[in-house]
Image (tube, rainbow, N blue to C red; front, side):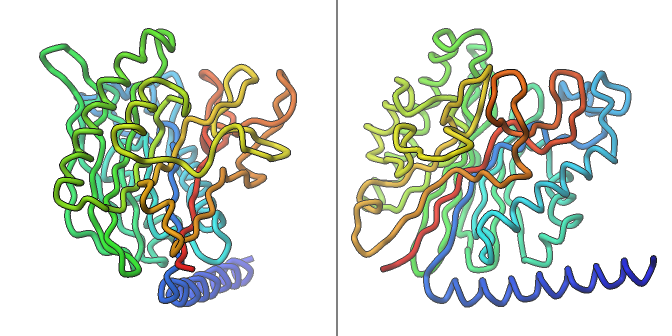
Length: 334
C-alpha cells in the first residue's frame, strides 16, 4: 500500500515537472491563458469575530470542517491544472475567497506551488468576509497592485473591493481588474442600482489608466452578477470601450449555455472583458470559452440537463466545487 502511494506521488511530481517545462516553452512563444473562477464560499474553518462567517465553521449550520475544505481545495487545484491541458493559466482571477490563509492552503496543499503560483489579495469591507484575489505564475511579473474601494460607508453600502493589478507578460503590459459585483439578492431590478454604482467606480479607474496609456491592454474579469445586456454592464462596456469575445447568443455547447444556472435557467454572468483596440488587433488571436470539465457538472434532476456541481445545496453538503463554471481566454500572437 505504501509503495503504491509513493509511486503515485512520484508520478504526480513527474507530471507537474513536464507541465512546468512545457509551459515555459509556451510562454516563450507568447501564448498564455487568463481564467476567472467564482469559487463559491472558499472559507477556512476558523470563526472570525469581525466577519459573518459563523455558518462556515465546524459548529455552524453547514458543519464546515477540514475534510470538506480540503476536498474543495483539491477540486479547485485539479480544475486549474486541467483547464487548459498542458498549459495551466498564467493569470487567474478568483472571487469568494476569505483571506490569505485560504489562498496559501489552495497553493501549498494541491501541487500548485510546484507550478510556481503566487497570489495577490487585499482584505475588503464585505460583511461576510469574501474577497477577490489574483493567482499568477512565473512568466507574469506584477508591477503594482491595489484594491479599488467600492463600499460607501456614508450610504451604509458595504461590498467587496475590486482588485487592480498591473503586470507584464510575453512582452505586453496588462492592466487587470478583478471584480465581484453586488448580487441579485432582493431582486434583479432592486439590486441593479448597486451594480451601476460599482460600474461607475470601475469605469473611473479605467479612465485614469487610459489617461496615462490611451491604448492600454485592459483585462476586466469577474462575476458581475449581470449579463451583457444589463444596464450596469452596458455602461461599463460603452464607457471603457471594452468587449467580450464570448456572447451568450453565440454559445454552442451540448451541456452548458452559461457560467451559472438558477432554477433551470443558464446565464452568462462571469466575464472576461478585453479592451476593444486589443481585441481587434490582427496581431493577436483570442480563444474564449466556458469551462465545462465533466467533474465540474452534475445531473440536474429537477430541471433536466446538467448544472454546476456546487459544494452545498442549501444547508446540505453535496461535495462539489462551485455553483459557477470558470471562464477562460487563451491569447497568442499570430
